[in-house]
Each structure stands twice: as structure tokens, then as C-alpha cells.
Image (cartoon, rainbow, N blue to C red; front, side, top):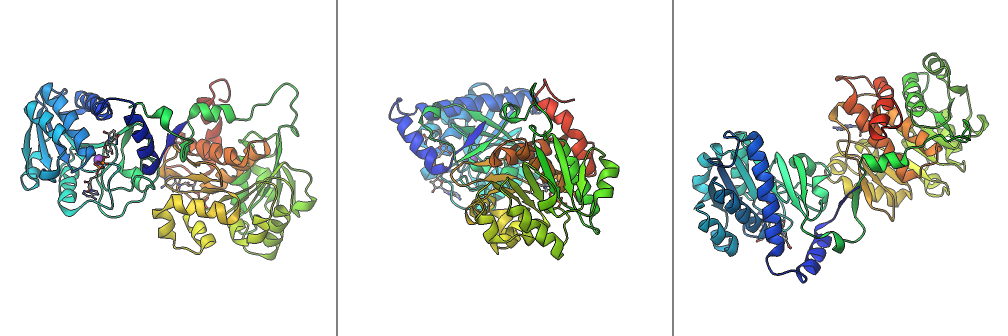
Length: 487
Ligand SMILES: NC(=O)C1=CN([C@@H]2O[C@H](COP(=O)(O)OP(=O)(O)OC[C@H]3O[C@@H](n4cnc5c(N)ncnc54)[C@H](O)[C@@H]3O)[C@@H](O)[C@H]2O)[C@@H](O)CC1
Ligand SMILES: Nc1ncnc2c1ncn2[C@@H]1O[C@H](COP(=O)(O)OP(=O)(O)O)[C@@H](O)[C@H]1O
Ligand SMILES: [K+]
């Protein structure tokens, strides 16, 4: 599991740790890790394939982030790099870092003289601001960041790309675009959540000894091993009912394909059987003959351990009635797509069994009476608000998928690709996640494992792909996560 913490929590933990180690220790640990990571990068990608003779330019702001950067650049200078520091606030530059940098033979320049040096550099270090940053880059720093970007010079962000909001992943104004980010002590939300995550590049964590002083995480991201431990596995005494039956209420005369896609996802999620309820039974059976079908209503379809309701349901009274029936059941329910529009808000809030809502940004905006752009620019705040207002587990889809449930850390999905933004891919996700719910995973685990597998399926599929291919990739994905199972 990867964990991430807000600035406030990081500061508290650093404060406690600092009282237990000699002054300057943390900065030296950070600088040593940063210099080693830069050396790696110069060895692999620099024009000179190594540190000796390479040209390193450090953008240095007024705080400790600049201090880290100067100490690290001094280490590179001692190993033969030609090092230049651009001082953005000369009077406020970290004194110890600057002295070390000068002793190592580094030279300093003003921002006005920097652009040609940046354009010729092998590596630019962004030490403008770290967790102390407020708002976007100021114009002078923004100009230097742009010069590096336009010259396609490799940029390493120190702790985080300057200009992004560390605790939320929001970006208000100009921000550095990094090829790699070397972060200290723990991950920060900005490195995992878009739009800030898009500025982060390859991410590496340097241990500075903070671990024992950090509380429960505010954000977490599952990794392969966490997902493997959660995947449902049939045992000796299993039968199809004990493995779980998932009911799918989806599709309409107008959108029969949504039913097929959701059922396809459900068949690959580990439940023992899939029941389809709705008007697209012929299309479903033609593609997946193993499905148990009925025309409805859901209340007469037979027992299930979880329901998925909503994909391609349309707008009619029958759809509304089906959603109401499903929400009135005492089993876990996943509500997606049209279901989110048709569902009665109170009926969701008052359910006693778990409920998972899976909106994309547009649907989330409608549920919250907010603007879509606001949801996209502040995903963390909005997914938390949805979980609270609906007393449900909420999976907010998009370039970063988040799963929120009150009283727990928000989960960030680390898999996925922009190729998943294709019609019907959400239908596959809802079937897959519903199947995991029926197989007995908690709402939060089902949502995060569903998003994880779905995101990997998108990465495994040959591009450009149609959504029906995603379900077919799941056995391969399952196997990669859990090498003793799957394809
Ligand atoms: N506190 C610690 O124990 C450690 C901190 N470390 C480093 O210290 C950093 C935090 O240092 P600081 O608290 O000094 O803060 P920063 O260096 O992140 O930035 C604060 C300074 O930048 C200025 N500033 C804020 N927003 C700005 C903006 N938009 N444009 C230009 N200037 C802006 C502020 O006036 C302040 O002087 C971390 O990110 C990390 O790099 C590491 O050395 C590890 C240990
Ligand atoms: N830019 C993106 N990067 C990664 N994943 C994305 C991106 N845009 C959309 N997705 C994913 O693609 C899926 C699209 O689902 P959805 O919006 O419901 O589409 P549909 O309604 O067509 O099925 C979701 O899993 C979402 O997280
Ligand atoms: K930085």
C-alpha cells in the first residue's frame, strides 16, 4: 500500500522526528537521496551518460526546498557536474545550502541570465517551493519553468512540482511539469491526484525516517499485493451460490449494449453467477450464454448477493421503478450512470446495506449541483462531499479515480490509462465491481479492486480498443496481480 499525507500531518511528523536527530540530519538525508536519484537519471538519459561533465541547473527558491536542492547539487558538483544555481530570492536563500554549493564550485546566476543555461542543461532541478508553497508559480519562476519545458530538458522536481497544491492535488496557476519527482518521507496527495499528478512524472520516495511518526494515512493507493490478497478465490466447498450471485439491471431497447458490457464485466469479477434483469436479455444471452436472464422486475428475479443498477437504463418509468426496487433490497447495491439520475436521494441515504455510487465528473456535478469543471479540478474535496451527503461509498471516475467512504482514508487508483475514456468502459467497471461485491468484498474494497483491475485491463488491451475487450483482458490482469490464478 502507498500512503499519502497532507502538509499539516507531514509537518507534525517532521517536527517530532527533528527533535530526535541532530540538526540538519533530515535535510542531509533528503539531499543524499535526491543527488543519488539525479545521478541515476544522468547516467541513463543525460547527453553525456554520467555526472562528470554534465550541466545541471538548479532553480532555487527561498525555503528549505531550495536548501535540499543546493545540498544535492553540491554533491553532483563534487562528482564533476557543472552546476549553476538560479537564485529566485537571493537574500533569503538557504545559507548552509548556498555555502555548501559554493564550496563545491557551483556558480550562481540571476533569473534574467538563466534561460540560455536552462536550454543547454542536461538536468534542471526544481527547488522553487516544496510543501511550503502557496498558489501557483510567480511570473519569474513560471518563465524559467516554461524555458525548461520548451527546451525539453529533463526536469526533476524536488519533493513536488512547484506550483501545485500539495495537500489536494489542485493546481491554481502555473506549475512546473516534471519528468520525475523525488519526494521525501512520504507521498503527498498532489503526486497521486490529477490535475497535479500530471505534473509529477516518475515518482520516487526517499526514506528520511519519518515512518514511525506518521499517523493513519489520509490517502492510500493499493498495490498488486494488496489487490491479490482481496481477490475472491473459490475454495473446495464452493458452489456458484456460495461464490455469490450478482444481479445486473441495465440496458434498454435503446441501449442494449450497456447490458452486454456490464454483464461481461460481472462475469469476470469472481461471482459464481450473473443474473441479468431487463429488456436486453436476447443480446446478453447471444454474447454470454451462461447468464441467468429474466425480463423483470428485479424484485421477482430471485436471490442475489449484490445488485448493479443503471448502465444504459434510459429514462422511463420502468427504469425508475427498477432502481427503487433495487435500492429497497437488503443487499449491497452499486448505482451507475442513468441509475444515478433515477435514484431517490433519500432512498440511498437510508439504506442499511452498503451502497456504491460510481459517477463520472459530470454525474458527480449533477448529484452535488456543482459545475463539472469544479469537480475535475478539486476531485478530492468533491468525492468526500459525495460520500458524506449520500452516506455511501463513492467511486469518482476520470483521469484519477478516487474511492471515498466516511471514516476511512480516500483510496486513489494507481492504474488506468486515458484510452479508457471510450464509450461503455464505465459499464464494464460497474459489472466488474458489482461482481466483487457479490463475492463478499466490502464496498470500499470492491470499488478499489474493481477500479484497479479495470485500469490494468485498459493498459493491457491493444489500443485503440472497444470497451467489450476490457472484460476479456481481466483473466490476464488477474494473473498478473495473483500469479497463481487467472490466465
Ligand atoms: N521540514 C523538514 O524537516 C524537511 C523539509 N524538507 C524540505 O523542505 C521543504 C519545505 O520547506 P519550507 O517549509 O521552507 O517551504 P518551501 O521551501 O516549500 O517554500 C516556502 C518558501 O517559499 C515561499 N513561497 C511560497 N509560495 C510561493 C510561490 N508560489 N512562489 C514563490 N515562493 C513561494 C515562501 O515565502 C517561503 O519562503 C520540503 O518540501 C522539503 O523539500 C526536507 O529537507 C526534509 C526535511
Ligand atoms: N483521462 C482518463 N484517464 C484514465 N481513465 C479515464 C479517463 N477518462 C475516463 N477514464 C475512465 O474510463 C471509464 C469511463 O467511464 P464512464 O465515464 O462511465 O464511460 P461510459 O459511460 O461511456 O461507460 C472510467 O473507468 C474512467 O475512470
Ligand atoms: K519543488
